Amino acid sequence: MRSLLSRVELGAVPASTHRAVVRAGVVGAWLCTMSFLIAWLITGESHWLVEGIGPLATSLLYTGQVVSKREDAVLTLLSGALVVIVVFSLIGTPATSVSAVISLWVFAVAATFFVVRRPIAFIVSIAVCLFAAPSAWTDRVTSPLAMGFVLMLSFVITAILIFSIRTASERSESRYRRLFTTAPVALLEQEWSDAMNYLESAGIGSERELTEAISDIAVLTEVMSRVRILGMNAKARSTMGIGPEEDLATLPPSRVHESSAPAMRQQVIAMWQGKPRFEVEYLTHPETDSDVDMWVRVEVVSTEIVQHSRRIVISVTDITQLKEAQSALEQLVRSKDEFIASISHELRTPLTGVMGLSAALLDGRVTDEAERDALLEVVVKQSEEVSYLVEDLLVGARADIGTIAIRPEDIDIRSEVEAVFTGMESPVPVEVRSEVVAWADPIRVRQIIRNLAVNAGRYGGTHQRAIIDEREGSAIFEMFDSGDPIPEDARERIFQPYGRAHRDAGTTASVGLGLAVSRQLANLMGGTLEYLYDGGSVFRLTLPASGRTEPVEDGAGLGASTPARR
Image (cartoon, rainbow, N blue to C red; front, side, top):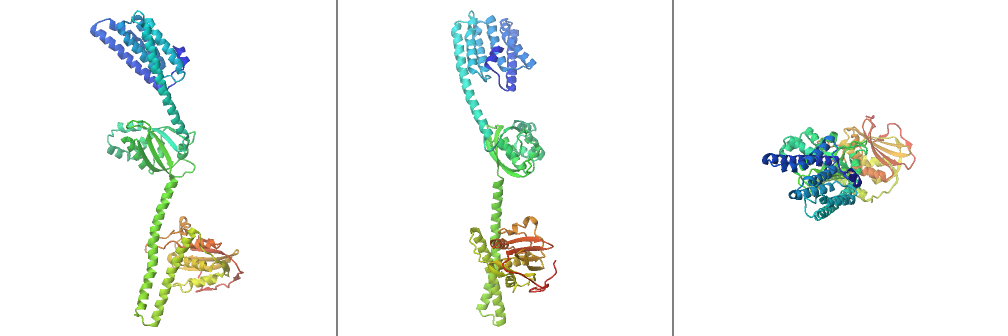
């Protein structure tokens, strides 16, 4: 028997399957033996004891395998067939020939499921044995050759069908494993039986009870720790930050945290409901050196065509960039809404004044010439505010399509600053440390200085001052204010379109374009615009110097005496 098994190489299946088959055989054989014994005790007929010899011999053989812990399903099945042949040869009767033949055929066919290599050798060997077996029963069966031929033919046909189906199944499984392993997406295979059994053993019988139970993070962690990971491909390990040498059989408790808990609860509930397909999204924290949170989309598909399947395949997709793009889009929509509200306010305020004053002048209600001139001056200033705002909007739009016109020439920075600051409601002291000539577009320079002055007046506290200087071959204009410092994480954002750092209650929100436009214009003219904090907020405009500079006596300035540095 052992030589036959060695020749056909049987039994290369999981040990658990062998144990299950042998122990099922033990139970069945002993039940059959007890049945014959009970029949003898009830009827008193001795033939029941004789017919029970075969099942008894089989029971002892199978029990010996269990006790010796050498459970081999193939040996069990073929030894059972051998017992049938020997016992029937010794004590068989024509009346029991049909049951003997059926038992012999069943044992042989069952052994076929455990053959993994050399199936032809196995089929031929067993077919010869089945054909020859009835020849030993010549005085107990009629037509032993015919019976042997029928046994052999039925076994061969059945065995070929079994091997064909199993081969197709193995090829499908192999193809699935190959695709699973080499797939460019992250794939995991999980088994949820232990997790679901745990919930059932806890007395959870409804979805409401389940929801209440897993709302406790400790219970959820216990459930997820019972989910067995059957396999994962290289992409899954990379996405989840798991090294190739790490043998991950279950989900580590550290991966169940507050950010991922809601999605994991959805997954537990979906598995409880037996859904064949579902998906969830959550924020995970991979245990990698990068230590970076990421958003993942988990899509779950059952691998078994049965309801309430507990074996699933999970695809994990890193959607961090998608979430960031979505967040940026949402922020853009909010910025657009804020922009519309701000621009409406910025335009409505001066236009309302222009319309009201113009109507008063047109109706002739203002007769005093001095008062009329004052009103006309207000109309002009309000109109200028509108034109400045419109110019910023045009520059912002042209910057997006790259059509801003820059016409540089030699300009005196002091003159441009004076042109902007003259006539302002609150004069800004200017300290001129050097008479410097810059190579820049005068219109754009005035636009930048105006935006910096407006920004300082809006957010810069009660004190503002400016400095004109020349440093390392560049013309410098610095706007100082006593306002609160801009947070470090917002010091670049304020130079982005619609970016703001101040949202104080009671302060009218700006459009958020002035600083962005100013930096764009400075860059186009070969300069820079940056924010610094040195005891106060400082916006520094740097432009290429063109002419020679001349030192200015201490104390010289524009508009007012130069105050001491704050």
